[in-house]
Amino acid sequence: MAVTPAGAEVSNAVATNWNKIWNKELKPQADQRYYTKKKSNKRYYTKSDSDAKYQAAGSGYTKAESDTKYQPKGSYALTGSSYTKAESDAKYAPYPKVFRGVWAFSSSSNTEASFTEITYPELSAEPTAHFIPLGGVVPAGCGGTPAAPTASAGHLCVFQASDNNMGTVTLTRATFGTGPVGGTFGAVLWAFSSSATYGYTTGTFAVSPLALAVPGRTSPSTDADGTAGRP
Image 1 (cartoon, rainbow, N blue to C red):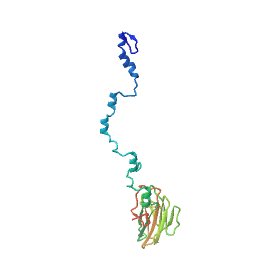
Image 2 (cartoon, helix red, strand yellow):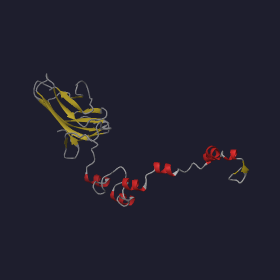
Image 3 (spheres, one colour):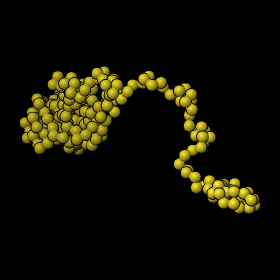
């Protein structure tokens, strides 16, 4: 006879089955939330492993120290090493909303066309083009005078400032043709002399983009008033 853990007397044949009962019935019911020591040692670093792999306490910045030393997320320059928006706005001129320039060309006869080009920063779409002859009515979308031209967003306004013995001036794309038409980064002006003798014409232009095709691209030169112009 043998005595069970509960104190009951059973035969030796039955007592020899406790290992089977433990392994098959009791052990599987044990709390599975915890690792055995062997599993824990295999899964996690020991203290010496951690000391070798990680910085010692105090060798890095605390959150408070980092917040003081560095700018917020998205700007990683040291505090004070770059301009704030307010400082930049005060230091630099705003990007011009209207680009202005001048043009001029001459013709030696009424049998041979002469031309010139106007250029401006590349636009996202062709502007609505207008040519205002000397003394002509300024259309909607344009404003000012030949001395101070201006344009509404999406418009190209070309003013004639002088006309000496020139025929009708046509504003068109670089492929020539009828007009007025302007390209996304420039246009061409062409005309014949109104007679067999020499003639010339001059003028100005203004263009205001709905959007630029290449942000930050500027024309080759800047006029004295801070607006971009032709070289």
